Length: 138
Length: 324
Image (cartoon, rainbow over all chains, first blue to last red):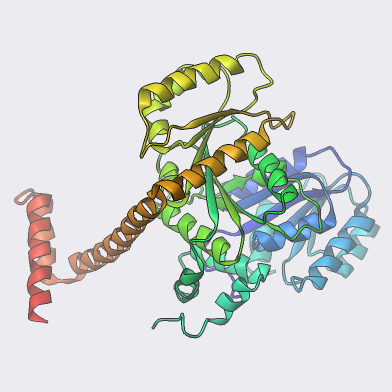
């Protein structure tokens, strides 16, 4: 399907994979994306990779944002990417935020995570990058 | 132009259970993409089979939670379920946070449920039309039950009235004056009242108050709204809620009201489509036709009032139609 037109709002899924109860960051980002005019499907806490990919397909999102603070990113993110490929939905860009060491971030980017935001990233940067990713411009 | 003879590829995919085709076509409907119109049209003969249940009510009464336990109940009974959850868009940014999935739990492998969040996008009447088409797609995709959840205010209520065969109004104990102010609106749409959070004190009082309202309200087509107590938290009252919905569905069939209401809804839909077309056409002519632009000038300078201008615009249209 073609990219959303200019007038159609960007739809983005925000989810927290795995066992991790800290959702303040995800909520702040969800709100910033909403204020930037996007439709944010907020899936919330304790999502399995399977649930995340299914939600992304059912909601026909342009973008997936994963937030993680538990340290399980090297197990959970590659699984999300793999399931997206299996469901012929690898075109949906995935970005991530949380506590992710540089070394891991490099490996995750090689695996296909399009952008990773650590602590202190400005909301403006996140919104701009999210928009570019959704429009296929980044 | 009629696509029913040979189904467009997307329509065929939807009818055979392709979730991605369904999801993309729903996006097309939301975005007003003309490419989806032939798909919706082609699938129309396959619609009218699903039980369409609307859930509405004030903010915070637990609509999403009730929906979640209701879906679980229906899945246990082996029914397939499509869900549309409508949330408001921000009037300022146009964006929205659609959070109804938070309450939604299901087995990862369960393909008998499809859940879709929709933003109201704030266009006048637009959400009702879009919701109606999305419900039709889910119906054509073969879901036996379609649940539509909306916030209980303003135009979004119209969506419920125009799409659902059974309408459930969700309330909680101690709404008090809230119920009073909602009274008129609630009575127009409620087939079933669901008093949620009934684990809290005051549930019985709420039931009594509602029963009194129901007895005062009189029956619509001979149906008197049922009142059910639920607790989504404790997962109680859910089979009773579904029984009440099914009782209303049976009543629709037995009384002949189903066909009558269906015709009324479809008449509203047809009129809506005509209104859209005539409106677009009138707007285009007001902007382009020199004679009508002069008319608008005169209204702007207060020499002519808008009603008189509308009469002339309408007369010009009728004249041209005769000439054709």
